[in-house]
Length: 347
Ligand code: MRU
Image 1 (spheres, rainbow, N blue to C red):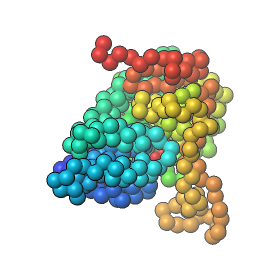
Image 2 (tube, helix red, strand yellow):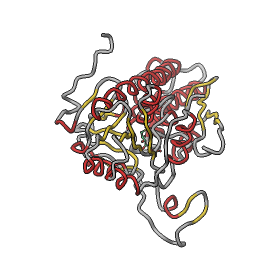
Image 3 (cartoon, protein in one colour):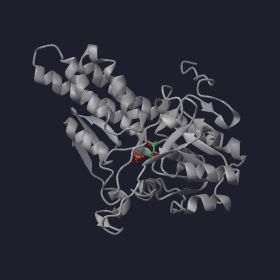
Image 4 (cartoon, rainbow, N blue to C red):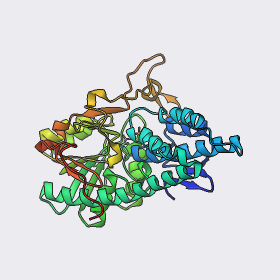
């Protein structure tokens, strides 16, 4: 099943908090439920959040239309509820992007908003295929190798999108093309998206891989364990600075030290030209409980405080390439997002 989809008038999504032990789908019909699912990471990953934002806006519009009966759709009420949804998590720009894009059809009514949300879903599926192909070609070109070993962090696979994924989608494409020697996912503390979700996805695709603890990543890069590092992105600022899961910045520093390419893979919907640089990106802090314990069990002494940024920002100077569905930008060679035109998709 798709990570997130629209089925019979409701959002259906895989509850990622239960993986890898149980695969269960949630059927979401109410806004408070969707906001809660986003905040507890039942649905997560920037592109999937974009689809959740758009489909959530469709849910809002349908319920406001139903409440209004035969009267005209109360647009202010739709906008008021949509604001709550777009603010459910702050860092991944895709969430507010998905809500805002769906709202562009507000004047055309609830059905039109749903059509827009379904278009976003379909574009996400196509974008992941395209990023995979571009990313795989680029990796062979940058490394000069036909078979590569790659390190990655968090979960950027089908679970973070509708299907296939971004950075993990490139790894899947390399596998399908016979070019993957081995993948090294980091476990990704504190919520273990790497150990729980990426390892589950890699196993299902029968990829060769070994799991690493986060703090082993930089050291093992210095020992030559990988030929490239791939990450996804939650927000790419206009200057190329990239917010992604905490730990990405350390990997970028280590990749530079080791002389291996550091590649960001993300759809154009993650590029936020209205944010000038990484310094302007709001970083979600998820509170002390996630650091001081796991799975309901306290691991630190009672009363211990913690700083828990869910994301960090990798400066563009450390990024070899940004791969989207429509272009490859090489910030490491001075290219900018404003400077590299989008491919003409009609060509
Ligand atoms: O907190 P999460 O699990 O939503 O964080 C997700 C990430 O950091 C991903 O790397 C990012 O959203 C890109 S997903 C293709």
